[in-house]
Image 1: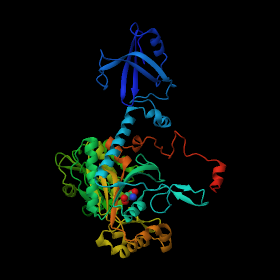
Image 2 (image 1 turned 90 degrees about the horizontal axis):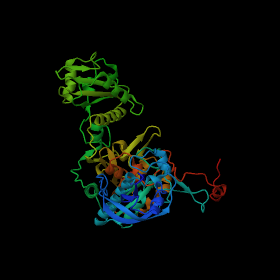
Image 3 (image 1 turned 180 degrees about the vertical axis):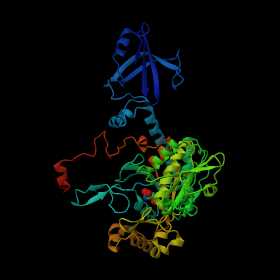
Image 4 (image 1 turned 30 degrees about the vertical axis):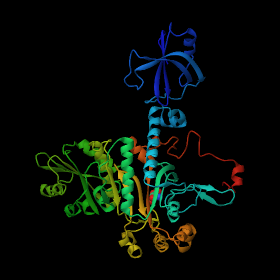
Length: 554
Ligand code: ASP
């Protein structure tokens, strides 16, 4: 409320926006004005009056051309002064806003995020329904399995000492639906993973989960490319161009990442052969020497280069140092390794990078995988510095031909890179027993602007191959039977070939909304310690409850 003595205004807010109410000494009754002066922020009021054209219009408000000359006003419920101002630029910090999330939801920005989410949900349902998919719910109380992330478990009162698990995804159920003959399934479904949290992770999150029978990789890809373009068109009004396919090996060697941001090039160039053998120990002892070209950055100052070195040396990035080469505008070279390499050699490097005068080369070296990861981080960092990642440009791609298995040094065994139900590329199946690390998976990930939107695979659908896979993953026969006997058994009864995919729905919403944090698109999210600070959960439970569940705390 603004009270200028002779005139008073109230900003009346509801889900649809703000409307200005006006009261005038002389025009409005004294009794009405008295009652208006008792109204505070966030009171719930009911009012009626006459809509009139405003004298001073507010072009920033949808209703900025009008106001209401109030004749009647009633307070339906007063409010305490809220702990932060409910405006777009609020004075409330994250923790406070989460504690009073119901007040935060009154802010336009948060409301719009939820409306965006709603639209995405409706359009997803519309598209998939039009394509003949049926929405089927799968259970939330299921069984704990050791593969994948950590499970959330739920004690069973009626079965003392036994536990359910919350699903990390409906993977096995959707496969059983295929065996049940429901050949196109989808569900917008909550999944639960007990992992450490980051901005793009929540312990409970939502997937658009799908499975189809009698399909190839390309069928799944084209159907979900269709969903993606449908959403972009109908929610953002954007036409997406092509969705190129990139092999996993290419993604790793060119971008150092299986989810490359291809809004800009700056692809990796390997110098291992060119740069070894010149008495520069650091390079000579490296498995890989690889760099990127920052076009037009040859004039970076000492300070700017030091800042980049500091960046790659951060523990999260993990490089030991960085070598730079400036290809000066006059055609000469200046590098941090001038002691070891002369102009001729540096020129050869520049040729490998297809560099021209004015360019800067940034080079890392060391063990292959960590070096690629560090350079990938540097590439993205340079992309930010050079403004190469426009927020309103969306560049999708499919990453395909992933390795089926990943070697786990610590556990000395293979893990499934996606999950144990993923099939191998048919030609590679023979290698599963001889050279498991070389087998490629019939799997695919959709990546947009460096964000993994979703992934899936063509599945194993016969008992023998599934057993072989469990064997490659180090399961004994008994373990495989105890954990997945139901699936192995189901495969014996005419299981159709099938495949599917799941999209991370919260992430997709954040991408559409233009922010990194999926929390902003969840009505009641958890904080970084997995807590809901509003309802104060998790919490202790009573002795009696524990007893009933046959649980003893130490
Ligand atoms: N269930 C898988 C996941 O949650 C997706 C899939 O393979 O369909 O990542």
